[in-house]
Length: 104
Image (cartoon, rainbow, N blue to C red; front, top):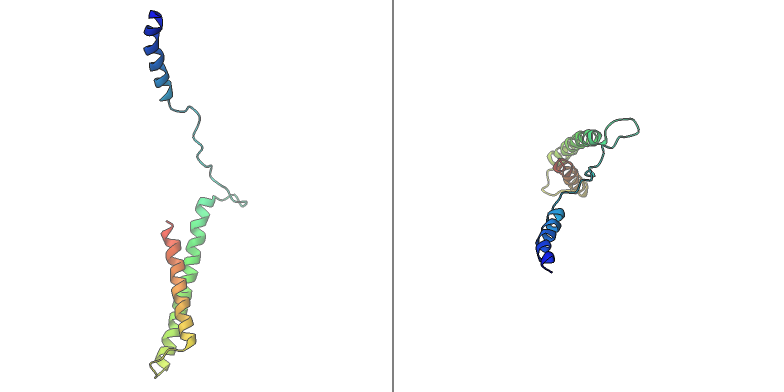
């Protein structure tokens, strides 16, 4: 009984210390994904997004120029349905560009 009382604190201490030892297994960090052409997916996604942003920006310029021409041609203070659709398309395109840019 006396031996057990002497060993009990030692056993409890060893249990607590082993519970705090970090896991010796290697961390499971995702490996770099390669595309079939051998390029890194991590590098190719931003490049593709950049190209889409440039194309959408050109589309924004075209839509805004078309809208400007129709607004200057109209002497009335009313927008046509086509102009409203252009405005909606401008807004959607700008939101797409903004959402792509927020990823990075």
